[in-house]
Length: 237
Ligand code: NDP
Image (cartoon, helix red, strand yellow):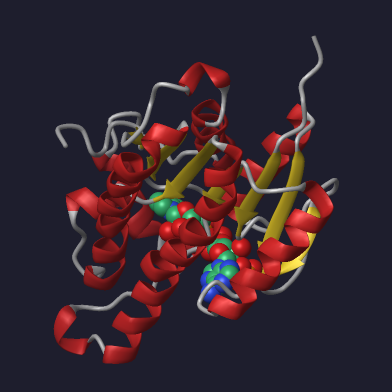
């Protein structure tokens, strides 16, 4: 039996984890759209420009995706930023930017996606959080707070939308080899690896596997879950 293509939207799908997620859905034969600010969607995916801090841009991105692929059935809210520093040095702007992108951006996306999913009476909302959301991280109060907020967002969506067969889950990666972690010094990378039971970083494809599973028929009864892909770093949450 062939796979019926699903309308998938992945934010931040031009680089790192988002790119691996988009490529995995393209490989399955789905209709994949990728939002980026700077272009460069993977081959086979529709490239839609969208800054997720701009509600009008989010609306326009969904309109473009709906025109090309129909209502979004699988939303992967992946785009995110860091702006790290210790709390006494953290500017209001550093706080606001990270919360506005990672948490409020996911709210904007989930709200718009829910509209179409409620009509379809099915859907998968997958939010990309981080192990530090529940573990905490010195120098990342803004980032950790934004990522912890995604758990409350997803679990509330799971309760609001469950009766329409819409699931909402969180994937919580540990350290993954991408541009975001490339800025760390070799010493910082070694310290992190020493704390990870599996003793290494994840590849973006390993995060994508969990996302693809949450979007699959096999995960139809999984909602409000936080799935760690962290090499064991966050065990005990
Ligand atoms: P990258 O820094 O490699 O890529 C970030 C992506 O987010 C880019 O595609 C970027 O688009 C997009 N983006 C950032 N801000 C906006 C915005 N305002 N509007 C639209 N798109 C935006 O990140 P990773 O691949 O490493 O991370 C992806 C997700 O995974 C993030 O949410 C991150 O917090 C999370 N994560 C990452 C971990 C890691 O170790 N790398 C660990 C745990 C979680 P553009 O190219 O246009 O700038």
